[in-house]
Structure formats: structure tokens, C-alpha cells
Length: 398
Image 1: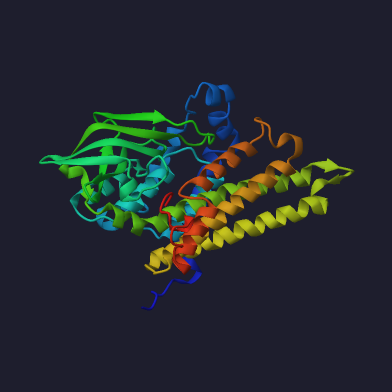
Image 2 (image 1 turned 135 degrees about the vertical axis):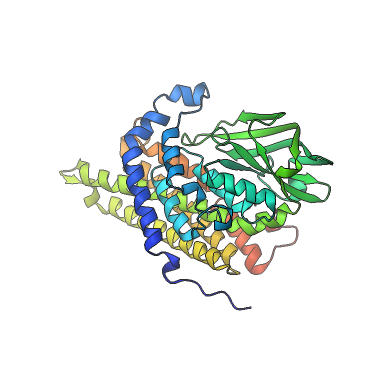
């Protein structure tokens, strides 16, 4: 079967460029790194010893809603803009480059899942997302798997809908969103539903994570009743498989953005820091790692847009390209983070310096939905087939 024709330049045109530039100006103005530091890194004891959730700028989130960002991935028939994923990826780069504390990334991924479903329920929730409702995915068990047999939430069917029990883990920005897009195993099927955050019987337990720009939680369902109007689909596994390339692209784009910030900050430092009567950027031991970092980021970015263009075109190789993008972006994030701390010398590892904020966001994103090693193992499955009984045959951490 021939692959659909893809747009030139990954489909990145004037509209996508305008969206990226508007995002850059907005975030430069309303979330400079000094403000980010005051928000999330003013008190290390509060964050790591007392376990307090860092504050976030809800006013900035309202501005993002007013600009229509949550509606970008929502199809027009559900009240959204139906924007190309290439443009959304460019926006996500800027979100990562500013390490924005908000539910935008989590809600965008939930939107990508819901838009793969059909029916009145999915349409109703997509319309609410387009109006600014934030939701997050609650689809993984304690091992990070979303496969039906591994799902940590079970469902019991009743005439009124579903009754959920169990736990969903690694739920992103759970304390910032209004609802959760949740999977639950019901017999042999994996069901998809949407659960409001204030649903009776739902408990949120905050996870201790190092990334200060987001929160994460374990959701525990104690006989949570989901009315039939909020049950989206009975074949959630197929929906997730169709949506998975987009989820990987979103996280990989955020990774490229945070890596770019670290690279640019390190370049500026190398131009300003003087040693032996020369800026340290003069020395090859500094110049060469910076060039390697630039190449690594550009490799990841090129694959992100190639994957986004494949998804926009409905191409058969979208999943392969998305896994390549997440692998390259994760590896770039690890390399750039390491070099940014090292090349900042004695101040690079301190709390007062901003490198740690982007280092930690990058580290979290590298693990989210599988790091570079995991993605390459999955790529091997796609290209040469799983090895019987070997680690490549495992489905965990999808």
C-alpha cells in the first residue's frame, strides 16, 4: 500500500510559524526564567523535605486558553481548530524551552487520545476541552504499562454505566486538571472513560518527583461510579495504539525545547566566563561538546517534525518515526543536561542556578512513555520482530 503524500517542509507553513512566534513572545513576557525560579524553586525544603507542590501561574494558563491552545488538537467538528501536529509540536517546543508549569502537555495528550474515539461522549468532552477544560491520562499501572492485561483499574458494568476500582499510576499534572481520561479493564475489554477530579471515591496521592515544573499522582478508585454518558469507548486498546505516535511526539518536542534552553544558556556562559584570560568557549574542550549538543538536538527535532508530518498525513510509518523521535530527543536531553551542568562548572549543580530546573524536566520527560533504550527496543520489534522470550517481546512501559 502506498504511503499518503506528505506536505513539504513537514507541513510547517505560515500558520505554524505564527503560532510558534506568538507562543515565544507570550512566554518570554509572562514566564521569564526569573519568574519560573520564584514559582518553583524558591524553597528547596518545601519541595523536597515537606513535599509541598510548587505553585503555578493559573493566570498564564487562562491566557493560553484565551489564545485557543487547548483547542488546537480538537477537530473542528467538536469545536476545535484541528491544527496540524507539526504546529502543535512547534508550540510544545516553546513550552519545554520555558519549562511551563501548566496542564497543557498532559491535557494535549489526553486530547490526542479522545479524538481517536467516536461517539457522543468523546465529542462532548472534546468540546469541553476546546473551551478550556484540562484533563490528564490515567492509563498506566505501577509498572508503566497500559496493556489490557496489566491495567491497574478494573470496571464492573451496571445498567447506569461503570464502577471503577483499583489504581492508575504516573498521572501527569493531576492536581492541575479538571478530569481524567481513564482506562479500565472490564472482562476481556479495555474501556475508556472520563472521570471528573471531584468524583466520589476518587483519591489523589501525590508522588514525590524531582521535576518541579509539574506534579504527578497515583489515582485510587474506590467504587467510583461513571455514568454511561462518560463512557467513551469499549475498545480503548485500539484507540491508544492509534494515538500513541502523537503522545510520543508531544513529549519529544517538549524535550527538544528544554534541551535548547540548556544549550543556549551554556553558550552564553561560555562566552562570559573567563579563564586564563580567555572566555572558556575559546577552548576545544568546551566548543566541541557544545557543537555535539547542537547536532543532537537538531537530530531529535528533525525526527519530531518528520513524525508529526507522518501523523498529519496518516502514514503507515508514523509509529516508527515517533519512536525514533522520542529516542533521539531522550538521548539528546541526557547528553545536553550532562554537559550543561559540567560546563557551568562550580555553579552548575547549585540550587540557585537555573540549569537544574530544565535538567529535571528533561529527566522526567526522558522516562515518560519510555526512554531512548526502550524506544529502540520497540523499534527493533517493529523492524525485525520480537525475540521469543526475550526482553524485546515484553509489552511493559509501552
